[in-house]
Amino acid sequence: MEKRKLGSVGTVVSALGIGAMSFADFYGPTDTEKSHAILNTALDLGIDHIDTSNVYGQGISEERIGSFLGQQGPSRHELFKIATKAGICRGGEGKDYDNSPEHLEAELDKSLKRMGVDHVELFYVHRREQERPIEEVAGTLAGFIAAGKIKQFGFSEIAPTSLALAATVHPVGAVQSEYSLSTRYPELGLLQKTAELGTTLVAFSPVGRSLLTDSPHSAEKAQTFPFLKNNPRFIEPNLSRNVEATKGFRALARDMGHKASSLAIAWVLHQGEHILPIPGTRSTDHLRELAKGADLSLSAADLRAINDQLPVGWAHGDRYSVPQWAGPEKYC
Image 1 (cartoon, helix red, strand yellow):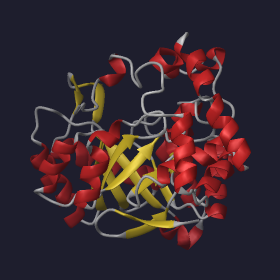
Image 2: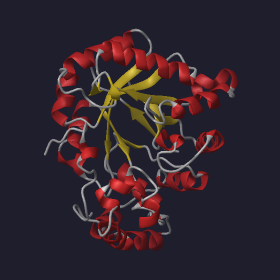
Image 3: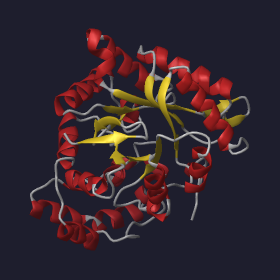
Image 4: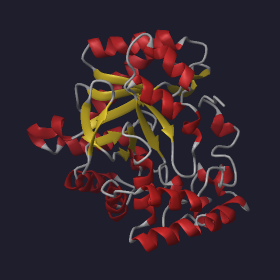
């Protein structure tokens, strides 16, 4: 597995990470045994970057990671570079997001306890509280570094301008954003600003929530997922149009001797040395497919052929519905 640096402190991690939202039934039912199987396979493949959050299953994802680590003996703290998040508090105290020092530290402490660790590599603000200056939040997070609870901090789905403001207080380790052949939004400034500041761009949903795989979700299957059934790209007629639009990409991958998901991962990694994709999966076979993408070397001709099949703007429907856009910052 190729290695890359995470954040300005230069922590070395696998080029491919795992998004552990799938450990908490977000994309279909799972259980502790299946989540542990993913983690075991990750170790076999050399994957050591795990991304989770306190709100994934209201702690279930972290608990499953913690129970796995608890079985590993003295080496448990060296197996993975863990990232987790806090800042979403929907249904509590009359607001959706809380970036106060008290809330973030309390939630971080709960996350550490659930996973049975005394620190994490990376701690994100999952969503910005717009009323609170991001410079103030960066100062809070820097305090967690000084306390030894985290090694780096980051933000999820913020604008390049917000990143620049936070970086005036303390180097920002990572910004997490959706980025794939189906979502090119970060190319409108975030990709460039993260590279300029030495911040890692952590790319979630790098295979387009199945659209960039050999088995995109059917309309019937999409309706079984609370998130996808209301997502514009998975509502008809957009879904059928998107499946049709990606046929050429799947054919290209076959002609090149690869699985579509492998090629999609390889494309993301070729967009910059500071990018780390974190696909989620409940299938060990699919994880192996994804990991193969980290080993692919694409030529300029390969990249042109991919772009010919899926040029910027090919997807039908926005990446989020209006309610789903609550929280992420738009910047273009």
